[in-house]
Length: 316
Ligand code: PMV
Image 1 (cartoon, rainbow, N blue to C red):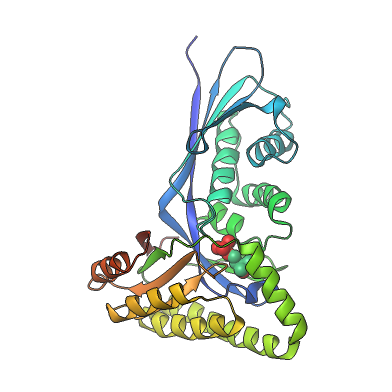
Image 2: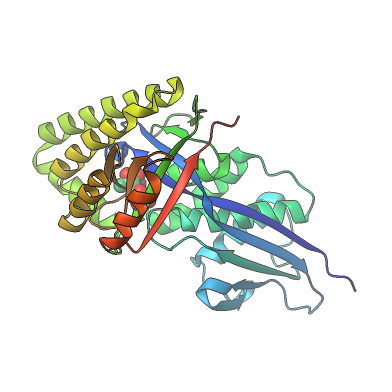
């Protein structure tokens, strides 16, 4: 029997502006990161024991029928099969690979889930519209993150810069001109859930102060969108610096991030800030063709675990 195999992929994502304030209904901007990604491959098989799932990077191999209710990979497979009205346990092999570091704010979970949703749709000849993909991935994220903002599934499903306000319809937008950002991993693992919980407690204790800071973040995010849509990318560096000052006040930066942000600026970045949950994880820096290499080298020399320079494209 010739094996029928179908493959689909999904890119990573990074938040440019507005993290944390977005939890309190202010806008945020996130963009796809096409330099990293996940792929899923669905292959028909005739073993007769149902769907076998292999996650190469996690060294996991298991039958769908034996997976726990809340297993992330099994869950997105089950949700997709149900959405398509397919057999609950088809005789398939689903293989997943990812170059996106786990739990680092690059959307690895949502990218893996998106690749699986797309590959299953393609395998059975059904179209996977971005809104269907986004909704399915959101439901799988809910099981793992409680109340995810919805940024990851939205950016990754639509593959465009996204303007995101909680509870409002998602709006993707196209930059007037492409621009570069450097993304550096501080190497410090920091669960987003912890930082979000700490911010909530601080907001409860000092509501007026935090609301005022979130308003200021909101204004920066509006200005950043105007700059991106008008092609004034030189403004993005100073806006990152302003957003970073507020993130420090909100209490989600840390000494190591502050140091790497200073290094990026000293090496020629037009501005820099943490990205995502903070207290570790990634920082981003506004660079251009002339400064990208020097900023990446300086960040690596200062201890960043990995630096990705990505181009935010101006494609429809
Ligand atoms: O660490 P990331 O990229 O998943 O982003 C977390 C962003 C927060 O605003 C801190 C939380 C959220 O759910 O939006």
